[in-house]
Length: 499
Image (cartoon, rainbow, N blue to C red):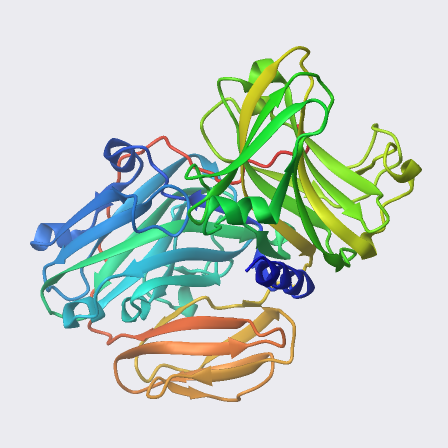
């Protein structure tokens, strides 16, 4: 099993394939039901038509973190009416560089009434413009499904209309809404869950993967993979913990120091591997609030090559004084042989200070040391160590979704950026595309009301999905709703560069 994990790790390092560097709008990791209802307000015109929506904190069915957001929607059967939740941002958020949007959804049923549902994500801006992106196929999936879509070209309002296109003020987003609307008339109750609502900045796009986690089947499997080395400065114990950020386990390092500036930590040995294509590390840490200020703890990611040279990046964890996970970003840039620069310092005490050979990495070591004299003990929890390679080529189309009328004029679709060549496909009955390849294609809607998707494939294997809803002219527009302002904000990525 350990050999399989190492083999998968090596394979992942050679094929890094998911766009990320996310800023989390909400991870839904709330401590209580009161926190949920303080942050998100239930809204919607279906509530006055006999519909009902309740939201709750869910700790068992979740994608990551401590909880997800549970929705139980008893829809009235009134077509084109909706219910949902509203979250205000104070101060407003700057999304001017946003490129992509992601959310996880867990659906429990595929009844007729559930199939009539579609959800919208709306962004309110200080100019009064409302930007929306919908998904008409979300309730056709059972279990967890990740939905990703562009955010830079949301359609204004609820109905897509090229004639009234305006430039929204994405530099000042004042609120986010998640609405569920009925496209049919069936009455029923639908339960679903949402988790990890986030967007990606164009300046932060990268190719990365979560290469190391600690979801081992047993304590024995953990210590076989990660050999705990105490050194001469005290004793180290490692174990699995349910205080975790993702998956179901994290690594708990319990350090009992008797002297300061000594390293101790677990060692992960791999076949000699080329790390020259890796440009940064990210790691999630959860400190020991009771001890961190007094202990002056340091955490290090240490790389050692086959000849014994090593280099390490160091994080001061004394700032981890609250019970929360925090992500640290470590560019893999080798510094000189002293401790004045980095970010990865060459260890002058290892292999006579010979520079690290990134093409022949043999070990990854998670060290800790204390800067406090005397006997010091503390826990450090570690989860989801990520390796990434920078890139600036996101896969973006100029339409994230389309709401149009049957028999409408052809709609031009254009690739803004990506790795070509590109191929296109469309669901049957949705209309026609003028071509199946190229960077620009015209979409002509079908003559009947229907929903479906347009698919674009790039050369890297990534798929861009554009949800399409063809709605009759007689369909009413959604009602304007006025909201109470809630002063709350939740950003997962509290970036720190060697605090």
